[in-house]
Image (cartoon, rainbow, N blue to C red; front, side, top):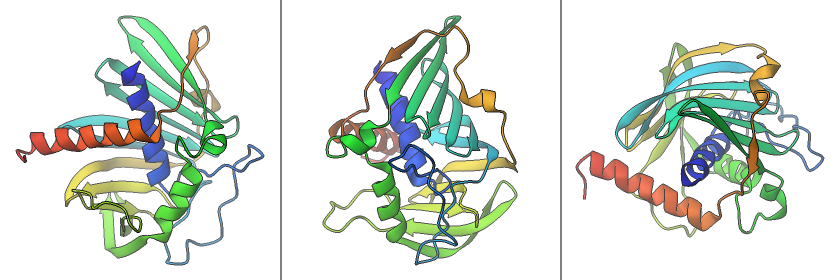
Length: 241
């Protein structure tokens, strides 16, 4: 179950970091993106549909990943410590599913994402996180990955926040798709290919007959703990104390 929670943290973090991730309104429908970008020029996507193949570096190991995005829905696939894992986020229904294929069995957990709005003090408010991140973004220059071009952006730490050990920058296309991320100059997320266009609706549905169990969104404390452990593992892999 801990692996499932960490997988959910990973997907929620990516959804918050990527401007291409949709923002949901209180009515449960995907909010229309504003025209242009933020006041500082940071791209704001949301309605771009695409299929993206990428590599995520976790603890020094490169993990292939496939991302599907269509409207208010997002799907990620990767091979995790317990086998192949699929995550689906549906901002129309405020649901997130984690599907694992282990030893010939398929298991799924469901999380109610409405907790992001009703319990923002104890969980993660992605809308607020994304808006605050965009307000603190600064453009560094041009960048490219996977045959796509965009702008490289860095994000200042929140006022009064403790200084972190890493400096993050993101390469974002003009239509708001994150195609690369760096930590301290090292690439930790890199796109190999990107195809825009509508995606098969069945990608965002549970396989028939899969038994689903309920889970809960990790608290801010557990998310901070998971991120701290991930940073420590990455530092150890690179030979840093």
